[in-house]
Image 1 (cartoon, rainbow, N blue to C red):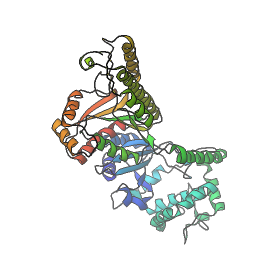
Image 2 (image 1 turned 180 degrees about the horizontal axis):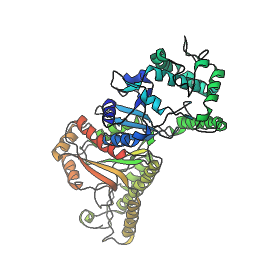
Image 3 (image 1 turned 60 degrees about the vertical axis):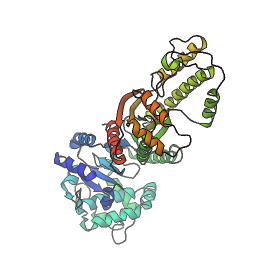
Image 4 (image 1 turned 45 degrees about the vertical axis):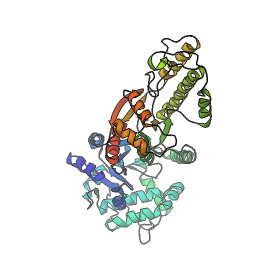
Length: 466
C-alpha cells in the first residue's frame, strides 16, 4: 500500500525521501512500523491530493504537534494499518521537542537513491551525516540523553546501516563534524556522545532553533507533564485532524451490524482515540433497572396515542418510558458531541431519527394527544430535536431471507423469531437517522470484501486537508 502510493506520487512529479529509520523498511511495508519521509513543501498540495484519492487520512498527535509534520494512516483489506510520518520541512531535534529547523531540503533530495524495496532513501553519505546531527542533539541535555539511551539499540542498527559512508565534511558550510568525531560515540562501540561535545555542537546550531533557548527547559517540563497525564489519565492515541467524527452503524437484526462495527472499530482503535456509545438503548445497571421498571406490564391502559402504530393503547408507564429513553439518548448524544469536540472518532450503535414509530425514533406523536400525554409528547419531541447530528450513518442492508438465516445461525439467548426479523426489516426499510450523511450499504456478500468497501467509504469522509 505504501509502495503503490509513493510510486503514484513520483509518477505525478512529486519528490520524497525516507530520511531516517531505514533499517526498518521491511517492517514498514508490512504495516509493522512507520515510514519517515521528507517532501519539499512545493509538493505538499500534490501529496494531499493523492492521499485523499487513495484513502489516506491525516491525524494528529495530541501530545506532540509540530509545524509541517503530519501523520497519515491507511488500512488495507486484511486490516493492516500503514503509517506515513511526513515532514514538509527538515524539523528535528530532541525526541519530544524537535526544536530545530535546518536548511537541508535540497541536500536530502539530491542525495536520494532507490532502495531495492522500491522506496527512495538517503544514500550512506547523507544518511550518516543526518544521523550524526541527530546523535549530537539528542545527547545534549540530561532529559534527552535518558530518552536516547532507552532506544539506543535501535539507533545503533540505524547507524550500522550507513556508517561506512560517514563524511564529517558532507556539509561544511552548515556544520563540520571533524573536530567532534573523537568521543562522539560513533566510532568503535556505539554509545552516547560526550555531553560537553554535544553541547558544543548545539552552540553552533543555535541559529536554527525554532524557539528561544531560554524556553527549552520549560518546554521539556511541559512536554513531560503532558505525556505523563496522557499516559495515566487521558490515555489518548492519535486524534483526527481538524474535527472529530461521529460514525454510526445501523440496521435491522441479521444485517451484520455487530460484526462490521466491532472489527472496523477495533482496527481504528489500534491508532486512533475511539469512543463507543450506544444510542439505540443507552445501557447501565441503573438505566436498565429504571427502564424495566417503567416498561413493566400493567393490567389497564389509559390512553390512545396518535395514529397508525400510535393507535395502540399506551399506558402511562409506557409513555414515561418513552420520554426517559429520549432523555437518555439526548444525554448520550451530548457526551458523543463532547468527544467530537476533542477530535475523537465516535462509533455509535445506531442513532435516533425524528420519524415517529421508526426504529430509534419518538413514540408519542402530539397529534391527537391530550392532557399529560400531550405534555409528555412535547418533552420527548424536545429531546429528539435537540439531539446532536451524527456525521455519517451507515445503514447496513441485506435481503430479508438472508437476515432470517443469519439470525437462525446466531448463538444468542432469547433471539428474535423469523417473523420478528421480517417485521423489523419492513418497519425500518426507510429509516433515516439524524445525520449529515446517510449511506445505505448492501452488506450481502463476502465479509472481507464488504468490510474493505466500508473502510474505503469511511476513510474518504475522515480525510481532512489541514
